[in-house]
Image (cartoon, rainbow, N blue to C red; front, side, top):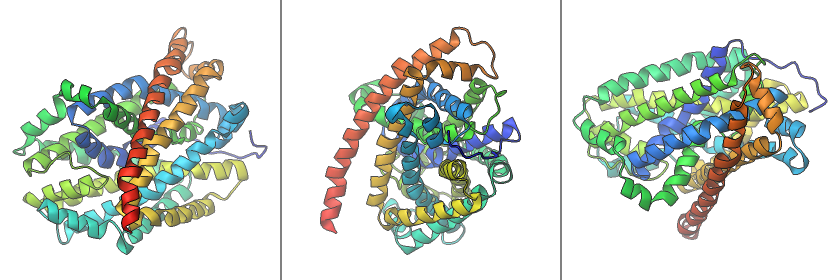
Length: 455
């Protein structure tokens, strides 16, 4: 542990911690990423695999991150420096790198959501998918995209700079209930649309033949989405748990967080796919800009679509903000814990660096996909693999003891949990990482290299 003594904040209430963790998990992972990954991967079959990942891998892996954070009361770098042996002491840096890569393009996408919220209230959305694609291309790259990227990061500076209780906790207590309320209202409205029945069939009735034929792409996509949406592999849950007292029941908190996150992801599908099917838009439209093209075109087809679209994209802005503050906190907590840095100043410096790094994905969509493929398919799963492997194989006794605090005598449950993490979770992550690396290499050779040659 660092020799520096820091008077660390703690969450003022359990509700604050749970909402912060839920807000982190909900974010763009659920509302931006989940619909287009589900559409690309075939709908209901992907949903089934994703839910299995959440249950079998998500909760055990989340508890592994929780026990490390609460035991050490440190950020990921400081936590592994304390408990790690040999090269394992440096595992925390994987989370810092992952966070920087993701936040650099995450804030660009968040900037798109701000612009599309304004667009719905002003000029409206192009009704034709081709025109919507041209509209997206004009707004999603270049100087305007860079400007909204900067605006979003400025909001992060203010919230994270104010600290845990006065900044993050107060913000999520407003944002997360607002996200849930708006999505529920949109779900009721979407159920009245003409294409709702066809959409529900696509979303809820899996084709097992298609799933078996495409499992090599569905498996890493589901693993990456599960980790992305639960904020695992980022170091976020290690960081947030480091602000918890020993009386908190980590198992109960983890179950609540995963329950809320999974329910919200599911609800987003119930909103998005009826809109797409009603407007006759292909739900499998690939790419990071899918909801900004397909969904915007669908809103353009619907009566009152401008206002409805503004409400939807405004909700995405709130969700993006709730996730981004947690991503930024990973790096800020490192600077505060290990170097005694002033919180507000270091938050501003970090967001300044993210702005510069984010100019690359803001320049062209292909570069954003390059960042996203590395983070989602490789870095997140790698981070999750490293923390679960170390906790279950090298730090199991301490992990079980830490999990028992706030719960009581675990009996054989602690042993079952460790073996669940040690064998099935680690094996699934190894396979998913291997497949993710293969997919990323294919993207580089098939998409990125030709793009470079055309420049």
